[in-house]
Length: 568
Image 1 (cartoon, rainbow, N blue to C red):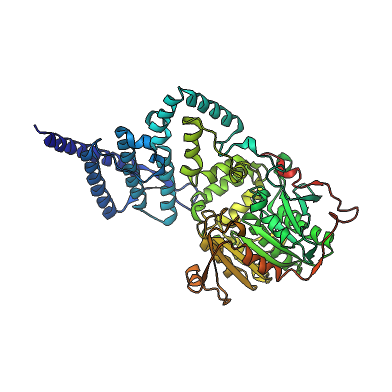
Image 2: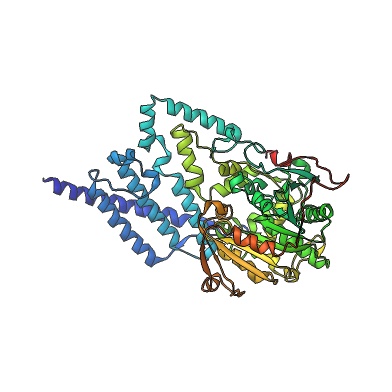
């Protein structure tokens, strides 16, 4: 029998094997049971669209036959960075295993997309399949990873020994290392903008920053970071620090540094954080500066908290804030992106039962959840590098911050889940009560600057734009390129990325409508925002010579303070 006949016969046999694999995969897939939102505890079997299923089956068998027919003789580039090194290309068996894996992965994702049912169920199935596919990559296993094997041979086993040491170290610290954490220290080479803590309570420290200009704007500026992270994402290095930029633009700048909750704060509620956190920071800033109003900025969850504080002020007939900036903030939770897969009535009830009356949502659990939103980049990439190859990840301040997790008080977390992600109550006038006041954001009529990042997977750009439809005051919306963090932390000096603005004052119902009249600009959006903010900051006055004010608000300790240094 000729070699061509042998290959043809083998291809036929392999086609039959893949056909059998297809049947088994389909049987397993159809037996999956998923929660059906929003009824707690309800489940339903997966149903697949027949037409999509038939097309997928044909495509799978055809591609499998082609893959086998090519055999081990002509490995082709996969276009996947996990298999991009020479070690994969030089090893026909490894190249074949990568190609077969990617075929199976594409098919499984096709099956996920063929699921019939509501959008939430399809998203949950897709998310689960993505996690399984990412975990089962041959690159994650030493037995199948030729790159790790080659390194083990070249180092005479040292890479394996170092990988085991890295694994033990990461197990002790409770998370996978994304950077060399030994090279960073808060206050020494991150969070270094000069300032002092001038006030503290059991929830936060208020940091006042030393002016870098002879004169400052008369209205002070208060930044409210998310309590789910530490504030120094806004002050990583001098060259990319939004805090330092604000100070250099002549703003008398104050920043809330949230305490990392322990059991002593396990009973704190959403109302506590609004009344004795955001609102207290605004009031203390006014007292220190003798200003009737402040300008305020909220980032991510900090923006959601700021919107609630402004709603409470409006309900009480108070106007302590002259303007507000919302960076990648959710107020309308209609579109919450990938995070929506976690939110069901059953999930929220479970959290309420566990910690609604007291307890802590562990910071590491939150960090792991966010990492698995991008499993290949933020989980398995480091598993392979740290453990299979025995490498130490390079120093990166952003990833050090990302690993410096914070806890959340249970009642705060449970309230937040139900009233925002699950029920979207903040945009329903009078639906929810905050600090004893019925919340109606239609009464928040101050000027606002709203920023959203185009590729944000935490706060989808459509959700950021939706804030323009909620807040009734004079608005400016800007869209920046990149994601949740990189889009925000984009200093003008870097001359990176792009942003879009629209100057006719019109805010159509959808982002697509807004973009039709928008203009594209190169570089950072910071300069546009700085120009806007200076127009709401009042006249220039002499910069203060000392921190705080009198005996009541003395400098307690140098910035960044001790609260931000507390570990979860």
